[in-house]
Length: 442
Image (tube, rainbow, N blue to C red):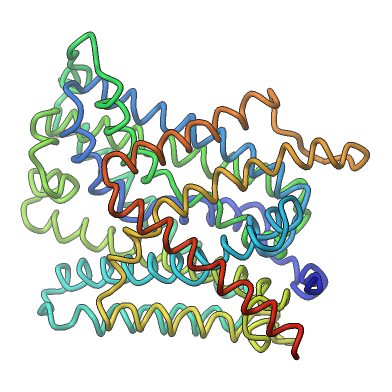
């Protein structure tokens, strides 16, 4: 068996509850809330149904957050889900998670969101489209460079951009309510009394994806002060804030555009701002979305690098990636490796296919990660946890069953990408055994 990584003794706990809550908010709010509501409106027939879906999705996500709070309190180590899977189910499932997430999904999402950042940055500044790739690459280089100085430098940058994205969200809410001029009935337009399960799931899928990203704080748990106390509070505070923001933004969209207007819009945030302030308004929200996407990239790079570093310390990746720089206590080689891989994906243009092929793997990791709670409760009865998810086992079971249902629905709606996602995971099995053989020969 590969040696267990002594990561908790190497990282320094420098993140307080404010930093941790900002990481949760910044990891969830990216570009989705500025676009996804239009997709949800297309798949629903009333404003009431749309708002209900965002509330239901928020409650389901909060259920997952409560589960991750217990896991983080039990094992406040860098690596998050990788650590839980390794301890509960063994090295192979943990490796398959790391293979799918740290090597494919994290850099793929960073490449995609960095490109989105560059798109909006060019739109806001009037730069030609030829600048998109250079700006996206430059953003990744800058984020990696800041994080090389340690978690405090990365957290400071992250806090600034999270506040900016919250400012953009607040502006959208105010503008939508002002445009409604007190006529908020459009936000409560009733629809058909009966909705098919297929329609409901099809509309819930983009909602749940927009709520994704709450797990990044657990990846950084080895650097959180008083983690048994801070992690549950920061996860609850951060995710609760996101749910409130998302529901209010959708209310503002409906109040300002109406359900039909929202469903017909390709860029509801820009359209809302354009109606209020003209083209200057569209430019302002483009800046806000650029800030939001930039902040997400910072969190994904920081969290993904920790997973990669822990994998390497276990002997499951190149040994130099396991190194933590003694002065800054940052996994500098892991940060550089993740950044370089994301840049390669941008330049090759292959990140879109990677993300399509790993969506199922990401949600499977959430389901199996939270399922480790059952193992911890059964096997470690004598080990008290400072925080326990309420209504156990109901809440973990609700989340796991719901996520598996989402995966099945995704496979039915998009069998090609779901099948490719499972193939990507399966390809990790021979790679795992090759690394095991390499360990025995070193």
